[in-house]
Length: 129
Image (cartoon, rainbow, N blue to C red; front, side, top):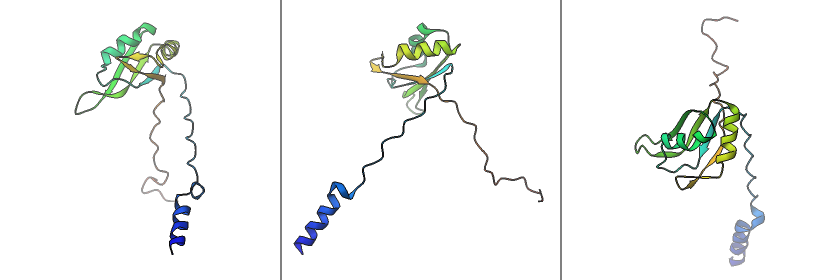
């Protein structure tokens, strides 16, 4: 009996009993645009501070730190919109992996929002086939 229990435990906890998890899929890079995504922001970073930090790379149209509704502090990411795609590219090169308010930030082109798709089955009522 003890041998059977030991064999069951060995099978349960052996490395061969479980398949390793698949490697994470690489995220597709976003298309170059004039809007950049900034992650790794300090909780105390403000939209004004983001504007000041990124304005040395070009004309900032809008800089917005996404904040928590209750606390009002940064959720750790934001967006910076430039006048041109070239300025956005320079900002990504210049600020990716740099310190802002004591934290290392990461920058990349923002992904465009996809339009919500309506279900195919939602045909207008009253149509006859």
